[in-house]
Length: 283
Image (spheres, rainbow, N blue to C red):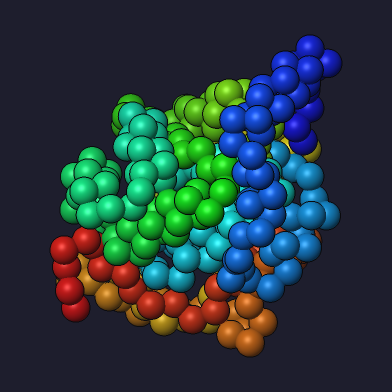
C-alpha cells in the first residue's frame, strides 16, 4: 500500500523532483497513455490501493499476455509499475534493457537470444514477445516500467513445493523494497496465485502457493476466466494447439472483485482464447 517512512518519503520526494527536472513532463506523458484494457480495469486500479496485483493465467494463450500488458498500461497512467514475469531473476536485466530500448531489430534480436529458450510453455511464445514490444512502446510514450523476473533456479524436488513458492514471494518482496513508489503487477500460473493451500494430490504433498507469504492486506489476486478455445501446451500426443474448456461469458469480459471463489480475490475474464506458438514455430 505504498507505506513509507517519513525519511524515505522525503528522499523519494527529492529524487522525484530531480527526475522531473531532468525529464520534464514524464509523469504527464504517463497519464496520457492510450490503453485497450479489459472493462473495469481503470476503475478497479483507481479504487484499490494494494501494492501487489497478481494475475493468475493459463500458459500458452495469446489473450492473457495481451490483456496483462493493457493492465500494465492502465496502472502506468498513475505511477511507476514493476512488472513481474515468471522467469529467473537473472533475466531481469535482459527484459529491462529491451523495455528501455528503441525497439529496433537489434534490440529485439538481443531479447530473443537472452530471454526466449524455445520451450513449449507460454513464456517462450509469440504472445510474450508481443507483450515485451507493448511494454517497450509504453515506456517510449512515458510510462515508468521496471521489469523483474522472480523464479528460482532451485528445483522443487520430491518434497513440498512450499519452499519454492516462498522463494518466489521473497523475490517480489525484494522488488517492492527496491521500488517503494511502485505497484507490483505479476503474471503467473494461476496455481501460484491462489490464496489457500493447494491440497495433496497423489504422491505430491500439499503446498502453500506464492501469494500466501505476501502481506495479505497488500495483495489482490485474480484468477483467469475464459470462454474456451485452445492454448499451446503439451500432452501425450505431443505439443501444439490443444482445446481448453471455459465457461465464462464471452460478452462479459473484464476484471472485478468477487467472493465466489475464496482462493482468489477476483476474476479477470479474457473471453475466447487462442494458442500462441513458441517463437519460431508456425501452425
